Amino acid sequence: MSKTITIKNTVYDKLVKIKKGGESFSDLFSRLMEEERSIEVLTRLRGSVEFKDKAKILAEIRTKRAERRR
Image 1 (cartoon, rainbow, N blue to C red):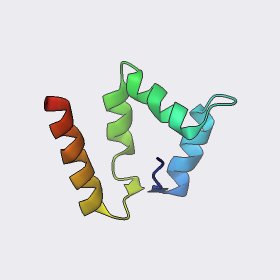
Image 2: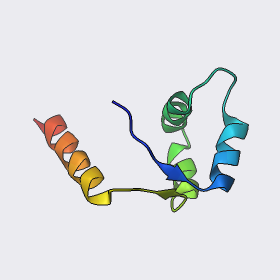
Image 3: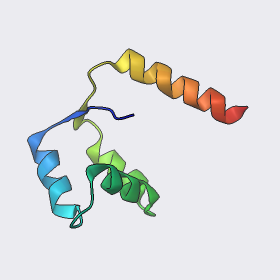
Image 4: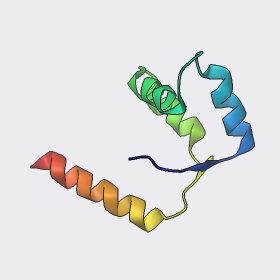
């Protein structure tokens, strides 16, 4: 399953610069999340993403968290 997110052009340009050749954006985000400084990267990107349906996304997050706790 895939999700669509909206990001500012300036953020997209930054992501393209750090994306490795042949790497998808999903791969890029996974790599950023695994890096030691991933929290710093995500903090810098915070506010750069506009979610279409925040209520739905939050419900999915809560469901996934509940599943992990079982």
